[in-house]
Amino acid sequence: MKARILVTAAGGPGAVNMTRSLLKDPELFLVGCDASPYFIHLALTHERALVPRCSEIDEYLDAVNLLCRRHSIDLIMPNNSLEAHVLSTHRSSLEAAVFLPKTDTLDRANSKWASWQIWNEAKLPVPRSWFIEGPSDMKRVFSELESRPIWVRGAGIPGKGIGGAALPCKSFAQASAWIDFYHGWGAMMASEFLPGANLTWIGLWDKGTLITSQGRERLAYVIPHVSPSGITGAPAISKTVHREDLNILGPRASLAIDPQLSGVSFLDFKCNANDEPQITEMNAGRFGTTHHFYTEAGLNLPLLYLHLALEKTLPTQPSQYNAVPAGKVWVRTLDAGPVLLDESEI
Image (cartoon, rainbow, N blue to C red; front, side, top):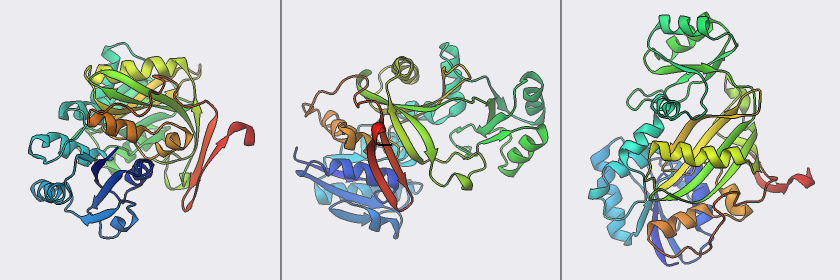
């Protein structure tokens, strides 16, 4: 399909993987922009340009619009939460299309506490959780919850600036010190610790209709020793899975956040001791970093996204669920890989 695409934060890992998927169509012309004079050189796009940080909203939008005019851009494709939020909020002033959820949808998804409240109210399976305003709340959690450790993490509330900062805490003193370190009172939450599988589900949506989806299990993480929890944002080993519970919960959780959802949603789940997935968070408006796995396994989500955004006929009609065979394994680490394997090869 002939189209001209602006990829933002094009030197970041998520956007680089998105670009790899888009380059599968040789008719596309890709322009990449980035705020880093270093990481811009990692962009795989046909053209590259420096832009201000998206926190400098007016200057950033001016630079994006200049690139749209200069290159006759048809669609702007971000792949991080910050830029997706700015572009969604200011879509009416952009000189090219975006295919992003509404700003309030992004706010609900980005806030782990707000999304937990929505899912809990909808009676979807979520871990027992508490919002931590002060030390008395943390003491109450340790009093009411018998199991240890307790999972303490940033609540992801927009404007609070704490989205991660996760640590399994065995004592009130440890939890309090962790929150103190991040100045996180009033911006963090605590949840029961779930010992089971670490799962994720990604779906592509058009006005509340699920187009296709796939589930995956994270088996290991890149440089886990740098994180106190042993979990980082980048899986080193992932495996495709077909689970009926994910195929039910992924769409239900997504539509609870926005019944008319368009674009991408991917959700994280952690299983309890009975292997029952509990919803822990949702990302909307971006693909994450590992979606190139699906492209190499036969499901090119960025290309499908592009066709939906420009209201073109899909090049293929993928399965609505389990769009990639189960048992495909993606292996990568810093400066090595990725490699796509079948379980039978391991």
